[in-house]
Length: 285
Image (tube, rainbow, N blue to C red):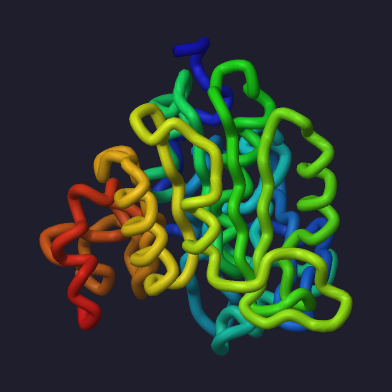
């Protein structure tokens, strides 16, 4: 175990009262997906842990939970990657530089990056699921000597939907990590893997008896990825999933995000597979 992380979660103000943040910059990642850098009108943003989320409020429209996608060490701003899938996310993706929005947070349980120290780390992402994993990737790369083998497995629908394409290429230049990318449907120019991302797991090199796995993406992809990791020998208590549910209060009071006996907003979103495996197998929950 190394020294205390610079990404420890910090205190926050009244969890029900949004703070005002201003959009400093935005970058269109895909036709329907934007990454925003937002900063408080005064002072530093609260500290957060990789895997936590904020509640972003588009004035006059509504509020949604969005995981952080930036480096937790940079205390000047929050970074959020948002896909246009509804009224609130559409309003947020259409904000311009200088616009303001409300923010409550940080909330939730993050990736256990300290617990993983000394072990191999396997990160499995599908589609937009790479965004909540990106702060953990930054943390592991910054503290590379604290970890064993590091493997990133990423799946996308097609080559045109690859999130953070240029950053993936930058990460590939690190000779001490392994990166494999696959697409469900290829085109004539694609030279990589074709197929679903769980199929990459049996080919990855890691010590299953000393591995911690982080998984984020659509639930069906996480279900099969957790099964593939477990079949490869990774203990279920060392497999962590980032769950997604409709969150409203973000502190476990309203019940909207109840997942069996747990609440995703306060007991998650990152949860160990051994604690949710039985209920995770029930598709209606």
